[in-house]
Each structure stands twice: as C-alpha cells, then as structure tokens.
Amino acid sequence: MNETNETLDRRHALTTAVTIAREAGGLLMNGFGREKQIERKSSALDWVTQFDKASEELIVGRLRDAFPDHALVGEEGTNIGDGDGYRWYVDPLDGTTNYAHDFPVFCVSMSLYDGDQPVLGVIYDPVLDECFTAIAGEGAWLETVKGRRRMHVSRETDLVGALLATGFPYDVHTSPENNLDYFSAFVLRAQGIRRAGSAALDMAYVAAGRLDGYWEFKVFCWDVSAAILMVMEAGGHVTLLDGQPMVLQRQFNVLASNGHLHPSMMAVIGATKAGRPAAPAD
Image 1 (tube, rainbow, N blue to C red):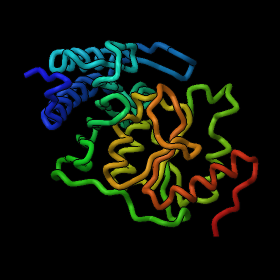
Image 2: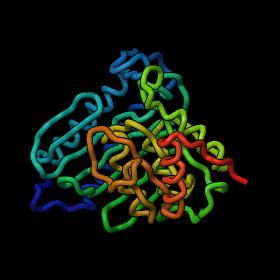
Image 3: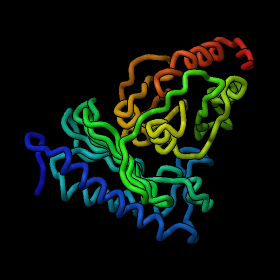
C-alpha cells in the first residue's frame, strides 16, 4: 500500500524503512572486502565508492515505490520533490572512508521528516547486525541478535567520567575550523574520546547509552537526521554547537549528550571558542 501525506501509518513506514535499510546493508556487506572504485568529491578526503551509489539507488528506488508522494534527499545526489511535506533523508553509507579501507564501522541511515519535524529514523549497522530505530513520541529502540530493547541515554553527570565521540570535517587539512582545538580541550576534561568515523553511529551510541556525548563540525543533514530523533527519544539533548535549538539544515555543527553533560560540554566549547584553555580534570 502506498502512503500519502494524509494517511501515513508511521509504524508501517518504519517497518518499510527497516526492510529497505537491511537490504541496503546486505548490499554493502557483499561489497565489503572487495576492490573499491574510489572517486573524490569535495576534497581529497571526501570519498565515494560504487557501493555508496548502488546503495542509494536501491534505497531511493524502494522509497519511491512505497511513498511516491514523498520528497527525497540523498548524500550521493538524490534530490526529488520540494515543499514542506514529508521528506526522506538518506545516507546510503555513513562511514565511507572506513568502508573503503575495509575498516568495519559503517551504517545505513534513513529518516523521515514532516517539514522540519522528525517523524521516524532508522540506522542499520550491517557488520554487527544492529538496527536502531525511533518514532517521534514512541521512544527509541535497538534490535540486535540478542533481542530488542528500548534505548536510554546514560546517567553520567561528570565530564571526567564521560566517554565522548567526535569527528573531523573533510576540509580539516585546510580550514581553521577543523575541531583540533576542541578535541584537545575535551581530551583534558573527559575520560576518553572515540573517533570511529560514522556520525550516525556515534549519535546512535549516545542514544543507546554507549557514549555520553558527541560533538562535530560541518555534519550534513543526511549524516545525523535519524540519530537526532533517536537521542531525543532516548532522553538526551541535541542542539547546535553554540547551544541554539536544533533546526535541521543542510550542513551544521552539532552537539548531542545524555542531557546531564550538556552544560559542561557547552562550557568547554565556549572556553575553547574564546581561546581560553580548558583546565585539566582532577
């Protein structure tokens, strides 16, 4: 059954999206470990492979069949429809650099928004066979080989006990806004920092309580649109990096946390931006 803006069944839409994400994940796993055809996009660090493109083609085709009235935006060039109605954001392979190097951390990310309001999100990690999902107002969930559970953010309240994650922009070699100062500041304050190479999984891990916080510069809407909803539905907090309310844009700086750590993370960010070194944790 095709869905229209007036008759959208959100649970049916989520089930459809999960099926598509799993199919795309299977495609990526079939290509994992095989020779990649590498193309460069915005910079020498911004890669795309034939499997990114094949995954997006699969996802877009399936979504068009299931939801012909919905707009679509994808990382690899898809831009179908306009207006303020339903719009899918698709990252067919988040973690392309990892994938191209056969480093097993990557995922498929899909989200549906109604105007600027998130409706649902799916992030599928085909390596671990973990599927993160959320529907607005209905919580966030994680399905693994061990079963399905509701996700909750961590309870950590002290930055020195926090495990954080971040990433670096594709123009890190040339841009002064490269996150290195912020990384250094947080290294001195947090228990640890991870740089896994997938923004979608980083934020999904915040929702799942595996990470306590995450920040990054210059993420794109398709990178984190699904994960934003997951963190919020799991009880966390997501803002722009300057603390302003989250409004999905094509590209932006983002901060996500379990909520408890948001003020202390904002303090480190503010001090770093002002050029004041952060005091090391006790």
